[in-house]
Image (tube, rainbow, N blue to C red; front, side, top):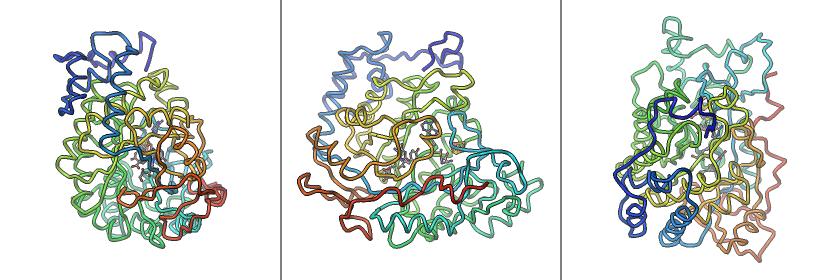
Length: 462
Ligand SMILES: C[S@@+](CC[C@H](N)C(=O)[O-])C[C@H]1O[C@@H](n2cnc3c(N)ncnc32)[C@H](O)[C@@H]1O
Ligand SMILES: Nc1c(NC[C@H](O)[C@H](O)[C@H](O)CO)[nH]c(=O)[nH]c1=O
Ligand SMILES: N[C@@H](Cc1ccc(O)cc1)C(=O)O
Ligand code: SF4
């Protein structure tokens, strides 16, 4: 968070968090397993709104309560998934100020000489990348992308979008012919990536919005078509902070909270599992974080199909928010730990909380597993979003890395499916280790340099 008084979060009109609850009462409720209120969560996240900064003793008490709850609810297993990230395109005009993944879409137009390090993959290229990774034993492909103006759900959607007056400004649409590389339709990309029995985890609420822009189609019907084309579950990114006054500052071009919730409900109604996320540590207050957790818990009370909560620690270095001086860092490690812990205590209806080695590195990622988290992400094989934002913790972890790290903290390594229903406990003494749950996995260790799911230079636009 910012330390420059001129750039205090209060400049956005956000009041200092204050509640009618005390830290001690909130902690007592958490220890007793009583459902927490937004005020309780605010007190725990702040280690008391009566103190300035984070009180180390109170913090330890919150982490301990969360670690105990984790042990009671899910035991000592630490899960991870053999997966691949395949980002289809970095072309995006949404302009989120925390994001350095995207490149403005005009740079991708045929004949543009704008320099950019972005890429767009055709469905054929996406399929080849997934097939390669399937051979290496992955269970899941996780695919999130920029909102390319030439993306449409299907041919009918192309026609509807093209029929608008001035489609570029009315519905953020330009026909594929305007671009050097055609990303195909969303259905074609789903078909291409859903190969050989792999689990396809794709289409965030923002992408689902893009796949129905300019129409009156429901989220449910769009997710049903995507599921028919091979989609298995949807990532709950684009959540950022689910409070509109924060979205107005960091992502004014994105859908609002209500729409994000409606998209998740649509995915659930279409029979898909979803994940949930929160990207924190920029301009928001602890109260906003607490309100965000409430949106997720209420949603889960209604749909029951959220498989995990993924805290996304804001990586600031290369982002417009940092470069424009709006923030001067991401969250502190104390804040990371408290977010994981309070998520575990508050989200009593979501079984799994993820620690991220991409965002936090191995050492701090392992610490987060002792603050309430029980999942340690996936192998991912390549990573573009965090890397482009200035993240420094690499793009791949092998099964041997996972087994070594998880056993080092006295926990049991477990390979999981995306939905956590299929699990395989790994015997640390039986190495070398490799994936066994993927459709073509046979226990052979993965060799990471063979798959290029992120920005494959061979398919760059230039
Ligand atoms: C880059 S977008 C891609 C998918 C799609 N364009 C969307 O917005 O849903 C996926 C998510 O990455 C996360 N992200 C982007 N930039 C980040 C950053 N600098 N630090 C942490 N997470 C970030 C955000 O939560 C965002 O919703
Ligand atoms: N936390 C991050 C993830 N998580 C994705 C997971 O690996 C997996 O797709 C999910 O748990 C569903 O099974 N992916 C990233 O690229 N970056 C992250 O920071
Ligand atoms: N972890 C998210 C997806 C995700 C993708 C890319 C990220 O940078 C972050 C998160 C999910 O599984 O739903
Ligand atoms: S977060 Fe998603 S929608 Fe926003 S700019 Fe980045 S890629 Fe585009």
